[in-house]
Image 1 (tube, rainbow, N blue to C red):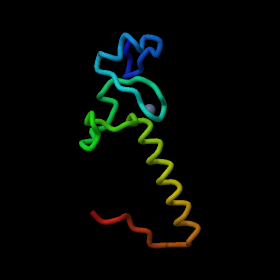
Image 2 (cartoon, protein in one colour):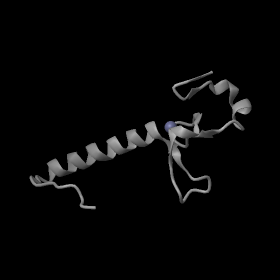
Image 3 (cartoon, rainbow, N blue to C red):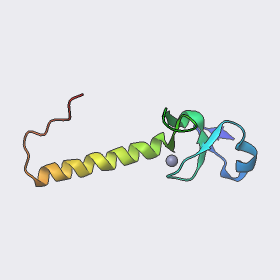
Length: 81
Ligand SMILES: [Zn+2]
């Protein structure tokens, strides 16, 4: 029933009480460890699962790269911490 965090979506009502959370992005129920911790959220977890956040981060990264290329900024340094 649970392989690599993939949850059989047809058993949602059964599984909802069993440590699962629905991702706001892909709308799938996944195990809680597939969500990043987010201390500001009411349930302490991010609203999107890790794979979805990765995709969002990649999209953001590539769009930033594109913008950097467009503006011809040669010395693009990541923001300092
Ligand atoms: Zn997701």
